[in-house]
Image (cartoon, rainbow over all chains, first blue to last red; front, top):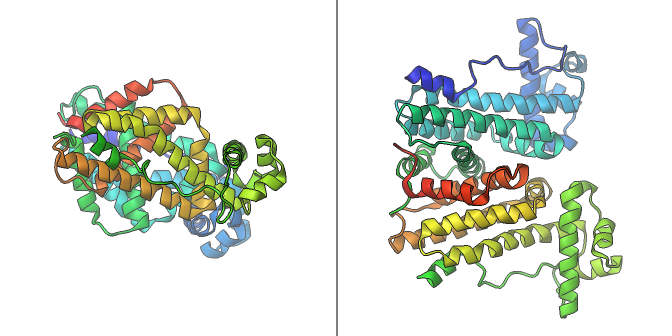
Length: 215
Length: 215
């Protein structure tokens, strides 16, 4: 049953599209490390300066790689930004997946998902600025990120309803509601202020999901 | 009791700060109409072009007013953008307030709030682009918009718990969760696609708030 939850909960089993520009995928372990260093540096560069002020030379300087190495993997600043949004989307998914999988009930799984998401955000505060800026810089990536995440949530809710852990009738509306909660709670308790423990935030939401707030 | 819900639910009874730049508040009804026309035109201009591509001359052309009239009320493009974020925030609040006030139970009030919010968004799709762009153009307005909205929600939840309509222990976490749901459901069913009736979305969420999704 845990395995079934796992499959519904994440796309981790699917092979992720390569981060590099088309035809520029790294073929060696060293190449993959360089690509990883460039993406991590791009997260810091765009997170601090935003897309318009950020630069390819700023990224390569932070990554400690030559400008030529950048163009080995990416065609342009637009391309690395697009790759970064997809990469961060995948990082969130992979970071919360183990917690979702190991829970013994879907309410506990949702609690774990939010808990690990807030923890991830605290370590990667730049994720909001980058994904939110994608709405303007690369609307297709922005839409893709949320549509994919909502699909994943809907699948895991429907699977859990079939297992009898959630009510029947789980739908896209429930998925978007849960995604919206988590995004805003991550902003408030992950980015803006760390004045409440992620576990306490997640407990409150789990109770709300379990039995509602009606008296 | 309806009146009490109303007070907790909105700030509509407070006098809104003037939209114009400091010291430039209109003193006549005609001046207030011109200011309104400028703000409505700014919503279209920034909604279509974004802040950086949008221009004061584009706003005055759309509003059908002289450039001098713009500077009678605003100091700069930054100023009218800031005023617009505050104005849209207030418009949402005022649009959902009557539905919140007239409901006979807080779950019904939350349902009405979401219903009217999605309706508002469908008529003002540019609101997302404008408020989301404020994160980059005017972070203080962005923060203010969400902090104020969450405070308002928390107050109405706490009041409803006191009246016995919601469980005890309503908190800022519940407020941010509900705000996040509503923002994302407005994006999905108001801006992206109108493939589901706002009433159906609101019914699903009201049921989720009332009794949760646990089996």
